[in-house]
Image (cartoon, rainbow, N blue to C red; front, side, top):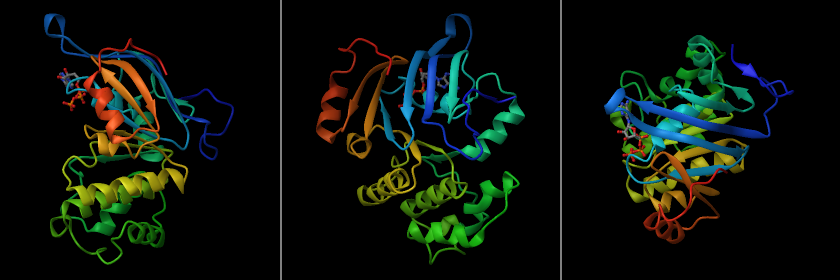
Length: 261
Ligand SMILES: Nc1ncnc2c1ncn2[C@@H]1O[C@H](COP(=O)(O)OP(=O)(O)OP(=O)(O)O)[C@@H](O)[C@H]1O
């Protein structure tokens, strides 16, 4: 069972806190080969916020995202998304939860090449056994600038357009939280800006919560705040980031004591 600790009804009413991690720990491998990817991470993110996660390569950013999204199981600790506790849930409940209340955007788009833009977009609804509202899907695709590409296949699109399909696909299920892992990593500057603007719009206009892993201080500057990771621990937080302040902090990461936010 996915446990709902809050008093609200999670199917209709969003929780105040979109994401809560308490002492989340995750290791890979066994014995002397074990790598601690996350080492007791505690954090909370308010609903309707855009947060970037940054840190050196191997600091645990992707692992954090995967554990927060219910794609990986932590070894210890608690993960709560939109008031619902994922840790301890069975695989079937987790899958149902992921399909219903979170959206994903990955660096490599993860579109199905044999499906059209429109079919890729509604796929999460089909997998979740939900009603497919094609008009709504078309509206979303139009909003991301692909209204004239509905019948195209991914190999007929640019990288930026593919990522916009991935964002439309993440938005169509109206998720509470969107997890994005390096969504601009494979894009040119202009396409990256379009994608970041869409993510920010999802937060500002539609009240979604976005958590985005990125290496790029410019991308991070689109977020409301940045969480810094070092060696699997939280190493700081910055509100109202700019590309310069983020780059500066990254250069000095490790100088700060680990914190919980
Ligand atoms: N499936 C896995 N099996 C074994 N080790 C893993 C696995 N996934 C991650 N790790 C290890 O856990 C640590 C954290 O990895 P993670 O991918 O979360 O870091 P990251 O900050 O996202 O790195 P990058 O910026 O390079 O993508 C690394 O030392 C990595 O080698």
